[in-house]
Image 1 (cartoon, rainbow, N blue to C red):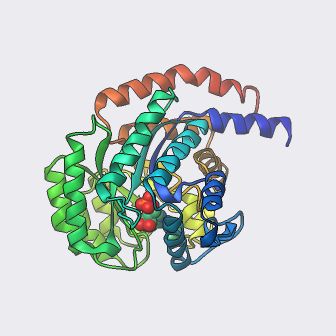
Image 2: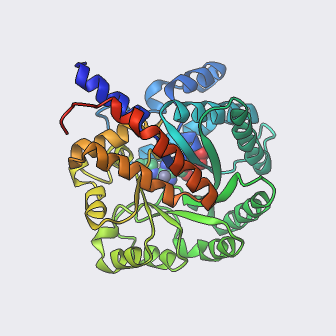
Length: 353
Ligand SMILES: CC(C)=CCNc1ncnc2c1ncn2[C@@H]1O[C@H](COP(=O)(O)O)[C@@H](O)[C@H]1O
Ligand SMILES: [Zn+2]
C-alpha cells in the first residue's frame, strides 16, 4: 500500500462514526465465528456458509439461509453474550462512537427464553461499558416479518417492558426478515401500539421491488427511520412522503450489492437521496455476513460518489441527528466530533481531494 493510501485508510478508521443499522447475528466477525464453530463441530460449518467474501454475490434466498445457519451456531445465552461483546468491541475498534444494535429475541431448546435473550444482550452492553470502550451502545428489538403478527405483539410487549427498565438502553423496534414473506398490514396494529408507548421505529421498507402498497401503508405510521428503501425511488408518491416527513434512511451499500438488490455501487440509491440533501446514514447491515465494516462503507461511498473529506465528515456528523437516544446524547456526541476533527484531518494533510 502506498503512503497516501495508508493515510487515507487511517482517516476513515479514525473518522468518528455512528452505526444505526446492525443486526447482531449478521455482524459476527469471521474471528468470532471461528471460535463458535470450533465449539460445535457436529454442525459441520464451513466459512462460505456464514460469510460472503469479496467479489462474491448471493441471492436474497441464499442470504436468509445463511441467517438460519448462524442461528444454529448462536443458540445459547453464553453464545449471545460472547457475540454481543465481540461485535461491540469490533465496532469500537472501527471508530464507531455510537451504536444502535438490533436483534430478534429468540428462544431456543437450550433453555434460553426471549426475555433471557434480550437480558443477555443488555448484559453484554453493560459489560462492555465496564471495559471503558469509547462507544455508546443502545438496543432495538427486532420483529421478524416471517413470524407473523402474534409474535410481533409479544415482541412489542417485551420492548415496552425493557423501555422502562433498561436505563435507556432499549430505545425501539426494528421490522426486518425476509421481505418476500408476509405483508406489512399484519404489523400496523403492533407497530402503532409501540409508537404510542414511546418506542422508536426503524423499519425495513421497499428492500425489494413491487412493495409500493405495503410501503405506503407503513409510511402512515410514520416510522422514525427507514432501512434500505432501495425501491422507494420507483414511486414519486413514496419519495414525496419520505421527503415531506423528513424520514432518515439507513443505507447499506455492500449489503445491497452482495444481496443483489442493487446492480452496482454507482447505481446505489445513496446518489439519489444525497443529491436531494435528504437525511441519510451509512450503515453496515450485517458486517459479518457481508465481510465489511463501517469505515469501508464510508470509503466506498466517497470513491463512488466523489465526496471530499469534508463532505465525508459532514455525512458522519449529520448521522448524530438521527439517533434514537435523547438530545443530551446528541450534544455530547457533537462535542466529541468537534474535539476529534483536527486529529482525524491531520492524517490527510497535504493530500489533494
Ligand atoms: C438477505 C440480505 C441481502 C440481507 C440484508 N437485509 C436484511 N433484510 C431483512 N432482514 C435482515 C437483513 N439482514 C438481517 N436481517 C434480519 O436479521 C436477522 C439476523 O440477526 P438477528 O438474529 O436478528 O440478530 C435475520 O434473521 C433477519 O431477520
Ligand atoms: Zn437490515
